[in-house]
Length: 183
Image: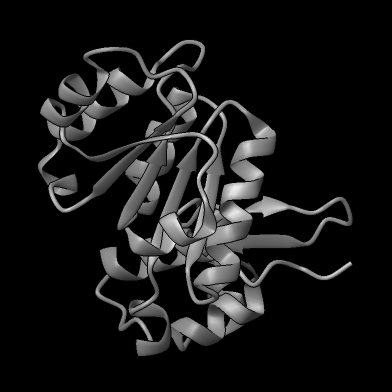
């Protein structure tokens, strides 16, 4: 099984920060940078978490990583979310794509990843797409975020309501791959 290029070992993360692996381990153990353990006990760091850590501490981000588009997909339909993420990765191989399956997790993802583009479902349990849009609209740090609403349950008035909440596009499911690229 191959590891995602968006998941880094502590050695890989240390090399990107130009520090010793032991320094990275100290930062992880001190919870300065989020990490998780594999089933085998190895520590892993997501690329978006590492990039945020580097930016917060004014550590120079290598240009090949700094310019990568960041995309978030928030949809409770796991099959649609996986298919959309796959299309994005296929069409834009340099993109950092992350997926969440409910509005709350999506809000956390957006706050952490600071994506350039968010593909957002409207009808989700708990925090719906409307509320996610409201929260994004009230966060100045997300002023440049392009929100694309993708839903299979659009009703009369949704286009105007979602546009007023900051959505740049409101589209019906399923999306054609060419549509993703045109955004």
